[in-house]
Image 1 (cartoon, rainbow, N blue to C red):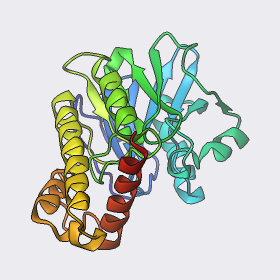
Image 2: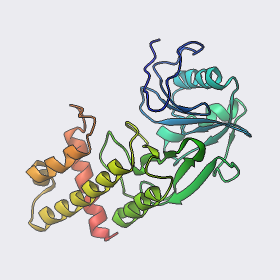
Image 3: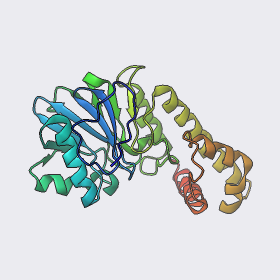
Length: 259
């Protein structure tokens, strides 16, 4: 298979890699990598004094075999511990595969000197942010994505803002922020994401108060403009129209709840 390499910190030679089913590889340091399969969930893999830590293994038996082989190619050993930013299947679906192979699932990275762990409520009731301090890398799960619209439904607007503030208070201005899906980013882009999300909520509220239907809100020029800000990769098939309507409906639910 052809390997897709993303260069953020250091280049990594192709020699020694197993067949990885088009899993892209980003090397942050000798002990820190970001792996992204075609499925698009960003996966973290870190070599620590206690063993290899894997964050957010995606589902899919064939890809999991490739993922396991890739980790062994990089570090010369198997995954020891599994962490999840949240429990949705696209981030935790590979847990059972690695547990069956001898890995241990743990709720927190508190036992590891290399990590800080922060729990917030935004995308889900239990979103966990993992900070790998030696590589200055923040794994934030679906609190933040760079290839989809915001999904702040569990925590509402207040939970979303608190979660973003928590991320911004971690690391430093040079920290790499790894979203649940999409290209890694930085704090300036995250601040823009927060601003655009709040503008989205405010505009949906105004249009609803004017009596517009969900379909009419979807076609509003300002709504379409804000929606495009969530597509920094400029993908032509960014969000299907039915998904935009669901986003508006769920935003209205959050507004109605007043959270």
